[in-house]
Each structure stands twice: as C-alpha cells, then as structure tokens.
Image (cartoon, rainbow, N blue to C red; front, side):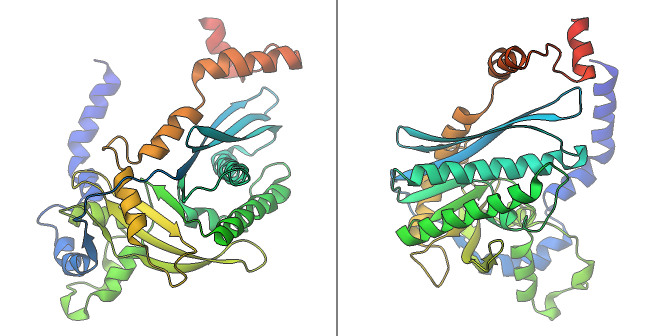
Length: 340
C-alpha cells in the first residue's frame, strides 16, 4: 500500500457523506418528501415477462488517438453495426490539427458520425425491425452550431448532420424504430416535469433553491421496483433545413439495484408520440445484468473496441512502416519507451 492510496482513503472518509448524497438520496432526505408523490404517479411498474426479440441491429463505436511530435493527432474511429451474423462497418482515419481542449468533443462527434454511416451501410442491405444505438440522440442534435477548433470542421459538421438526416429519413420511410440507450445521462427533463406537477402547497422551499440533480439521481433514489418513467415526447430540429423528428424519452429501471438507462425512441409507427409496449419489451428482454445492460449493445461493444495489442502491433507498426518516421510518439511517450 502506497502513500497515494492512503491519501485516497483519507479523502473518501472525509468526504463520503457529501459524495454519497450526490449519488443517491438518503432515506431521511427532505428531497424524498418533495419528489416521491409526483414520482410514483409517473413511474410505471413493469410486471410483464419479456418475450424474445430477434430482428434487432445494434451499433457502437471505438476510438484511438495518438498525438504526434508535430502536435497533429493521429485519429482512428470505427463503428460496427451488427445484425444477425453480419457486421456492417464504417472507418474514419485522420491525421490533423485539433486543439487539445476540443479533442474529446471532436472524437465524440467523429464516433457518432461513424455510427450513423455504419447504420446507413447496414440499411442498404438489411431491414431490421428495430435499430439500437449506444448513446443519446438529444445529445447529438444539440451539437448543431457548435464550432470546434479542428481542421475542416465546418465541412465535417455539415456531413455529420447530413448523414443523421439521411438515417432518419430512411427509417421513417420504412417504419423502423430507432432506439438510443445510454447508461449515463445529464438530462433533467423528467425532474423539471415532476416539479411542474408538484403543487406549491407541497413545497417547503422555493423550486429555485432545490439542488440541480439529474433525472438519474431521482430515478435511482426513488424507484423501488422494476419499471420506467412516463415517457416525455419532444420535437427536435435536426440541423439545417428544418427537418423535425419526434422523440419520446423514458428512464428504465431493469432491476431495483441496477442503474437506470435513458431510452430515447424515434418511432415512425406512432406519430402521436409515446413508447409502445413492444419497445418496452425490447428493452427489458435485452437486459442482461448490472454489467450487461443490453445484450445486443454489449456484443457489438466487445467486437468494435480497439485493443492495445492490435493498435501497437498492427496499426502503429503499419503507420511507422508506411510513413517512414520511426519515432511517431509524443516526447513523453518516447521517453517512457526508451526508459523501458
């Protein structure tokens, strides 16, 4: 045991109460009394037994980035869409300038774009009943207009939304629901909905004085059985051109002790919004365990991930051989290798 772990242990002991209170409401928390009545009015218990679903495609992506000694970034992005035994891929390789403060945001957009392209490749050959995507739809739409400091970003920005619009157009024409599933979420939409449902007489403090907690904080704290929150439907504009899409959002609790999942559904079969029973069945049937929140997404995640040995022994060796520059790493990485 070293000094850093001792320091970490001390930090946890000194701050455990504050950290825990930010993750889950204590049983005696005043917040519980404020939210619980409204929460239970809009939480739907799941009492069914899920039935098998087979015609499902699943999509996920992976990234690898290495800063070169000239400050440019070598970026490799790949996405897989798995349908049955068929894998439909999209691969984006780049060497370009990206401001360090914008790297992660840029990588996220590249991964999402690769996912859209991968799904489009799949739709040229396949016709699944459902399309599952790892991540959030609302987060993708919100990226419109955000400029990042990366080479040729304006052109990429337009390509990103063009591919997303094409994907939505095809699935709308074919009546294929697209279901986005994310384990982590910063959304506060359901919380705001609940606050609007709480009569002023039941509030002991002003709404503005309440903690800025997330939907998942409330759901994880208050849900005491399997179920899902009442869906909330919104209209989103997708990039330039006024293309609109209807999205219904729910937070699913697959097991009481597990974390909630945010589920966003774009379902052209239901123009009035809401989430149909077959989609709820799909989410519950696809649940595997605490470590495996969705069997289809977990499977494609394992397949698409870049592995360290693969990157160093295959991709980076090919880079070094073809470019003819032996020391491709940053200075810090080069020192680490030479010391070894």
